[in-house]
Amino acid sequence: MMQEKLHGLWQHGGRIDEAARLFPAAPTPWLDLSTGINPVAWAPRAPLEVNSGPLPTTDALRSLEAAAADWFQTQPEHVAAVPGTDLAIRLLPTWLNGAAIVAASPGYATHLQVASGRVASSALDSADLPDGALLFANPSNPEGRMLPAARILSMSAHLDRRNRWMIVDEAFADAMGEGSILPHLKGGEAVIVLRSFGKFFGLAGLRLGFVIGPPVLVAAVRRTFGDWPVSAQAIAWGTAAYRDRAWADAARRRLKEQAAALDARLARHGLKAEGSCPLFRLVQDCPAGKIFLGLAGAGILVRPFADNPRWLRFGLPADDAALDRLDRALSLG
Image 1: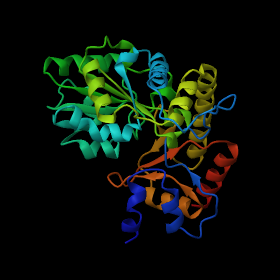
Image 2: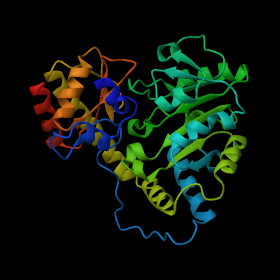
Image 3: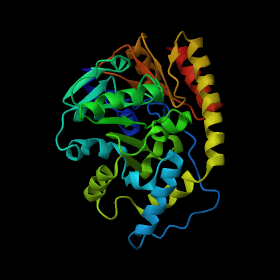
């Protein structure tokens, strides 16, 4: 009965309102460690003037895509802005003309929803890849495993020889600072890359993402979303953020330090953290249900997994105070 009530919390992160209803006695404010979103968001150095009255101009949209392309180390004609990558994932079958999609598992819930088949994420290291367009995350979620670019290029060449697409979801790649496949592509490969703005910049509510691929694919994406795919706010904030390299460099250093601190605190409680992505850590082979309920009772939400009942994913606490709160709650469990 309890698992049925908690079903929503086992499907996605970030459902603080639902957690608060299910655990009304928990202290507030809640500490949300259920996502992989940077807890310290980017902010403009000076106020951004955004006129929400008129429709965004094409020039402004193309400036955003150009700033993103420079950030991704690719060309603007390969980049299309979209209102979040979750929606883009759901539309992949449309752009691939109904081709079967095989998703790496474990993986994003939305990946598995659009896929007609699955392949173990560990099998991505093997020479044999399944039939269908291959969809996977790099770094992977929830393991935080980063496949090297050379391996992905080899996979791409293998799939291309068989007239099949490869879709790489690089939602967390910005936090790594390296490892993206995009700088290594020439532009004509049957490769689609998805990039999320909100995770690294801590602004998931802005609903901004990008689909990067061959021009024919980008044209299809733009036809789907029309002339105004994202809001004036997303254009202004996204353009400015992608140009703020100093903030990005400092954020990556801070995330790495905070991730190391989280690893140390978890280890104090016998929990071994895994993964190379600093925005989250996975703990395997632990009493996940017990820990989850204990933390929820303390007003801390982490991410459990219905398919892996001994796994817990911990998002990154924003500061030492949040880390101390997690430490105290684990001590009580």
